[in-house]
Amino acid sequence: MSLLRLDSISLKFGGLTAVDGVSFSIECGEIFTMIGPNGAGKTSIFNIISRFYEPSGGRIFFDDVEITGVPAHDIANLGIARTFQNIELFANATVLDNLLVGRHIHRATSIYQDMLFLPKVRRAEYADRHRVEEIIDFFDLQRYREQLIANLPYGVRKVCEVARALCTEPKLLLLDEPSSGLNVEETEDMVYWINDIRSDLGITVLMVEHDMTLVNRVSDRVLALNYGQVLALGAPADVARDPAVIAAYLGS
Image (cartoon, rainbow, N blue to C red; front, side, top):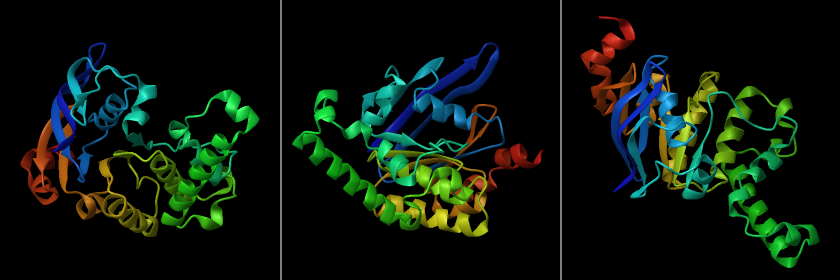
């Protein structure tokens, strides 16, 4: 069953077409990757799915429900979480506090209950902290939990952003260039995290990535884009051999 489906999605900025009639679907439990040169439209598609951008045409379906008109602030409630190409964390807050931010969509208490710290609030706080600690253990972040994000190495911050997204308990995780800025060892770790997110947590992954080694090791299917259009879709090895993909990357 398709978890996410895009039907003829287009995006235009004035006279520039960033995404041109792109269609694809992602099955539950799949790791699906979009590749392509800079400016191919990959992050634009992420922003359309996240509802940061309004598509110029086409429709988006998530869990068999159309979400084309859903506002951005409701996307996390549907079960979609994302990371960003440039890390978007609260630099002057701790790892623990950043991850707790990801739990806000699960809070069902009112501001008055929170102010009085009623038993319902205490139970919710305990449940949130318990879930965050599970994610901290999942990523082996125990040594960093009380440290400020600003004081952490770049690779650890990258993992923290993935961890915060998982604290929302998504069905679909969007990873925007998860290996960007990482060294070889950190990229190797990211391979294991992505596979474990699917196998241990049962979360479907949609990824944008340039590192083809990582793409080949984790992806079930790959979608190649160029100038906002689909070049190829299929298994990683098949897409890598496609003449149109080779021409887009290396020139014809």
